[in-house]
Image: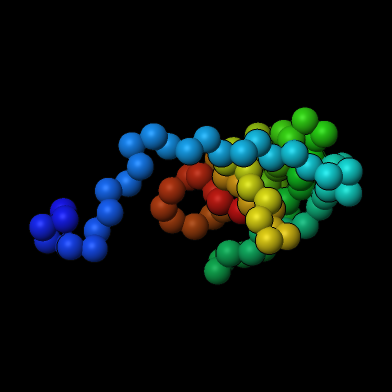
Length: 94
């Protein structure tokens, strides 16, 4: 790659471990809102546990555990399996 792209840098061979999400007391507890897609608005609930686990549910679907949870610049994000009524992957990033 460096022959084709002289400024290209090889990625680190060792992935950096992600820092575990640790919620503040203000974040723990139950939250309700909606996930908005180009097709619809889907009710969503979150239960943020002191351990950092997050249980989520999209309108009537099974409760799921969020993965790859991050808290960056005041925004909480993660991924979970679920159907948001659009075409494509069945994993939802929120």
